[in-house]
Image (cartoon, rainbow, N blue to C red; front, side, top):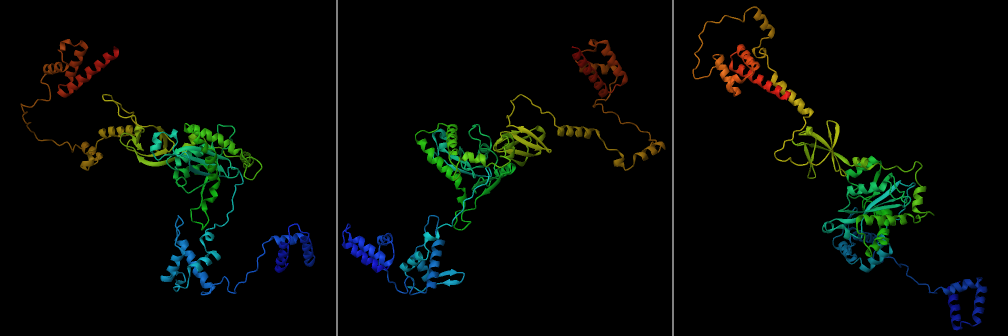
Length: 551
């Protein structure tokens, strides 16, 4: 209908009272004239009737500059504001950007762009920035995102840490309150079903040891029969923090057959928030803090074990809630969407500890000890001074060592020095036995004279047979013995018996007939002092040993 007809009809109706019968007649006449229904006419009358505005032909178009130049300058201003924006949202003002364009210009890939002073007005530029979509609100709108969801249960777990609202609870103790330790929530959530498992831990920050301990508990069977959530996932999705960069953590996950994926670094994908895909586990943390930890203001747990017990009880209710878009609970969705082969069972704790061990080449000291983190561990004595390979894990309280391609252990911290006055001798190792045998051999071997004289032993034998070597020596007179030097032999048997009595410390008359006969036999053989004393010493030592054995 024409706008003028609606205005005239509205004016006529305004002059009549609300219950005047002429109102209905006017509406029916107008409907018959234009072929519309009364309902359509009443709907048009309810709309605000404003006159059409008359605009100039250059409305919303720049007048001093061309539209292309104005758009170019507005893009440069918007780029300057975006380039100078810091993390707190502070940036150059529009006035400052215009002054830079007028005074100094902007270097671009096409060259220097500079505008004449007075050509750009603050109000004009501000209006066109908003009208053409170059303002900060429009440029910071993120592109749309598409959520993902795993096909099967345990196909993908989202894992993260979050500081608890308790921070430093009363049960943490004075040592924790004075240190940088704090109470944190460690949690995983199954990407398909939304089943959540969380634990409280007192940590200094996100570390690999706490992460591995928590993941072992999450993958292992739970003591509560109402929580069947377990198994080794195929993928763990987490942020690019210190845990995901830990070599021990990556090594353990590789041994378990778990792929570790981290979200893209911040600012690596344009204006899109790259960490948004980890929001499922973040949302579970928010639910715990708003639904459970708010009750701690009324009653706080008395210990870390009690806090974890309350958390497990709440997680039973959380996992029993409805799935995000299915008509059953989260726990039922986890059961129904397990892969055909089922979940992969977790290994034992002893096997899991071996995954966290890193080989390290060390050299044991002379006491067969090696120091780790200020603690000295006592190794086998055969490793003293040898190169060894330490198999040390972050969950181990004892030490394992690889030596000579053999794994040995466990070894425990050194007991310390032995008390004064006691003696402890280690059992000889194979290396020591070998070294002693070589030492004894070195004492018994000698060098043939032929090695020094240059003649072979066969030549010596031939010369001996020919009596060439045995040449007659000329006669000579021996040099008189020095009267001041002792002689090497006894003068007679009496002198020898006197020396033997002094050696034994008793007269020979007190010896038995058998012993006296042995002494006489020795003196009959030789009167050499050294030989006689050696035989006497050997004989009487043997006699004393035999008597002690008989007793």
